[in-house]
Length: 101
Image 1 (cartoon, rainbow, N blue to C red):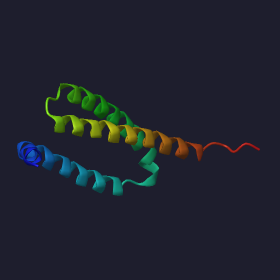
Image 2 (spheres, rainbow, N blue to C red; image 1 turned 180 degrees about the vertical axis):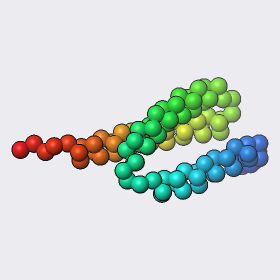
Image 3 (tube, rainbow, N blue to C red; image 1 turned 30 degrees about the vertical axis):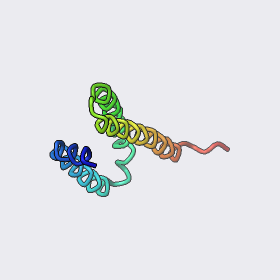
């Protein structure tokens, strides 16, 4: 438990930054109209691809177990977001295709 508290106190600014990004992301996503969802999802997929690569690089250079665990969680969540984004984009684009008779 002491190691967790030491990690939190050492990376306090980063934890605040992540919390701020979560709140800002939720606020931005709620205000996006449906028409813009597909283009923004494509951009988010590209950004999360970069996030996944960055998390893998940082995870490979990390000495701390907690940093490796956080990097692994970042890779998993980024991958889920990319795959989910492609699934949602594909379903939305299918709605615009002509139906076969």
